[in-house]
Structures are given as C-alpha cells and as structure tokens.
Image 1 (cartoon, each protein chain N blue to C red):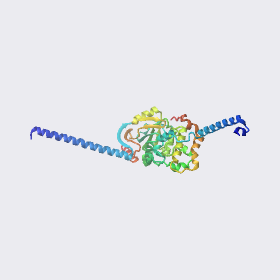
Image 2 (image 1 turned 60 degrees about the horizontal axis):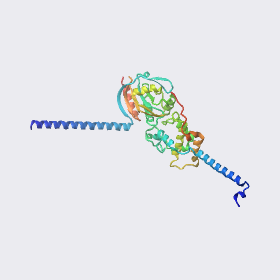
Image 3 (image 1 turned 135 degrees about the vertical axis):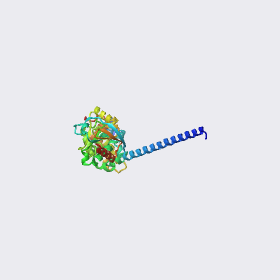
Image 4 (image 1 turned 120 degrees about the vertical axis):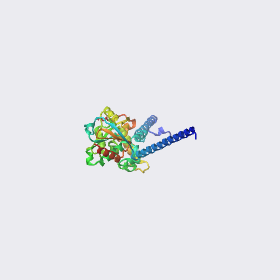
Length: 212
Length: 163
C-alpha cells in the first residue's frame, strides 16, 4: 500500500469515526430530550437545576402586613407564581403547593416556607389572596401569599426570571414557575409548567434541608 | 249595508279605532321585544365562557375541559347540578369561587357574571329534558337581576381592589 493510499484510508477512517461520534451524540441527545419531555408530560412541569441568587424584597402578605424575604433566612423556600383569577396553570400549581404542604412533617414545617407571589396585583388584594388560599385549604403557619406595588412586584418577577404580560382584567400570561430557594437564598430548582410533581418538589426540599 | 252604518261610532270613530289598534299592536310588539331582549345566548357569552370557563368545565359544560382531570376535584356536569341550584346560588359560586374555581367578582363586571350565569343555564339544558319552569329562567335572570347592561353592553367598570 502506498503512502498516499494509507493517508486516504486514515482520513476515511477519521471521517467515519467522527460521523459515528456525531450520530451517536445526536441520538443520545434526542433520547435524553425525549426522556425529559416524557417526564415533563408525566409530571406537568419541567424540572431544572439552577443557581440564581435571589435579592431581598418586601411585599404585603394576605393579612395586609409587610413581608420581607430576608426574614426567611435559614429556611428552604418554595416560591410559586400565580394569580387568583387564573383559569389555566395556577389552579394546578396552587394545588401542587398544597399537596407539598400536606406532605411536610411538623418539624419540616418549621424549616420550610411556602410563598405564592401574585402576577396580578390589580386584582389580588390581600383579602382576595386570603380567600383564595382558604379555598385550597392552605394553612398559613408556613404559607404566605404576597402582593404589593406593581413596580416592586415587577422587580421580584425579574429577580426570579418570571415574564408577566397582562391580556385583560384578570387574564395574565406568565411563566408558570415554582422555584425552590435554599437556606442561603439561592434558587436551586425551577419547575416550569402547570403541575409540578409534589413528590419531586418534596424530594428537592428535603435534599436542601440536609445541606447546611 | 256598510260596516260604518252598522256601528254607532261613525266613519271618523272607526278611523280613530283603527289607528289606536295599530298603535296598540306596535306597542305590544315593542314590549315583547324588550321583554325578550338579552335572553338568548350570544357571542359575548360564548367568548366569556371560552376565556374563563372552558379549560375546566369543557366546551359543553360536562366538566371535561383539558385541565379537569388534573384538578383536585373534578368540575361538575352542569346537566346534573345546575337544575337544583337557584340563580342566586350559581351567581355566588361564580362571584366567590369554590375550591379550585376562581372568584370572579374582583375581575368581572356584574353584567359579565350575569352572562356567565346565563351561559351555565344554557349549557345545563343541552341534551336533557327540561322542566316547563326552567324555560323562564333566562327571562328572570335578564329582567329581574341586571337587565340593562345585558342588553346594552358592559359599561360599568368593576370595583377596583387596591392592595
């Protein structure tokens, strides 16, 4: 075999090897995406691992009292974005949050705070939020529902990466985010979708509780 | 023998009677139109239902909307529940919410809630034998509760609820 033939054969081998690698990687990626999509389909929300520091904010809770995020230092916080007249994803998100609350042990309840932050301050006054939570059977010992000035809320939405767009009175398009924030105020898990699996949320909460 | 000769009112009296009669008939027709106005299902109700109700209650009110199966409690079939409820009871559920169903009073005008109520009644009748008195429900809703916004359109803004 001549040198040129050897080179040609080597180059062919290289080309086919790279092709095979590319095809294999593409297939693996497709399978992984399909698996994630299937999981999202099953749970109704896509789970993402993230690390995003959440800045302090001050809003109004369902009793009309001021609520500061800083006071939750040392707790794991589950934050859901919803609004009370939503007829789309929010009922499922709030129902999932309630399921998570039910599953927490009494000891975990002292270390885990649930928050629902409205995406519609025009409608969601404290008393409206309070009535909404009661309809879901929420217990307020570790669950607060927050509203506030639209400008302040806009900062909070941005802080969590939530997009909000008003379509009409009481009809809002928003990112269906349920976020889990660790003890050091970093968002560690993001569930994007209508129906986060309460068991998966609980698993992530418990994994963060174990971390100092 | 002509008619006017047989009547004691004469030709002029007959003309007056005829004109009065025509005016009376037109008046009755106008009253009937006013009475029936706002009682039928219209596009506004359909749009409202599509925007706010269809996801859970389904297109025909059977409680089979796309979200229904994933809710904590499945929405009812209007055919089985609405018949037993008064207009006031249905209005309160729409206004104050129930379970996972939102309270629409803070977001909607009174006339829109009336439209929703009528829509619920219309859907509850489809495919079911209705009692004779149920035929008058929409008349009652349209004329005894909030009549004129239903006829003329929404012109009153809902009360603002500032946080």
